[in-house]
Length: 157
Ligand code: 4NP
Image (cartoon, rainbow, N blue to C red; front, side):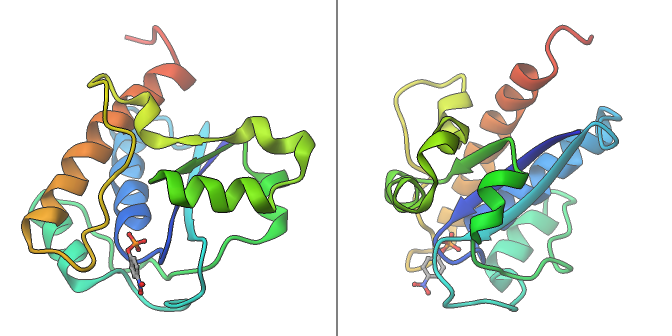
């Protein structure tokens, strides 16, 4: 089993969206028995809460249900358990680098490093922004999620 963890700040907007999008890709491609996905936040502000209602609504418009997810904070064991720990932005990554044991640092990265559209490194935080930000998150994590899957399980079509 390959284990993937998506990480943002609050675990109520970007990383739950990435988890929901990636899980749907796994289901569509019948890979759910080979790749596991989870998400967490660098901070504990929203622990136990479901995703932001704006994230849920934007995902639902694309047929993706996020409502069963509950926010949690990254714990030290995550660095051992997960194979790929992918941050939504460079602040999240810096925080993970500070907490991760040196010998496990190779597991850390940015989700958008897997995007075919070069350039952008950060999934912008939609929490304080307008409604369009939630659709932008979906667009970004969908294209990077497809790139990630192609990297993890290449040449399967
Ligand atoms: P997320 O968005 O990191 O994508 O879940 C945020 C949610 C909450 C806060 C910041 C970002 N907050 O400061 O409460």
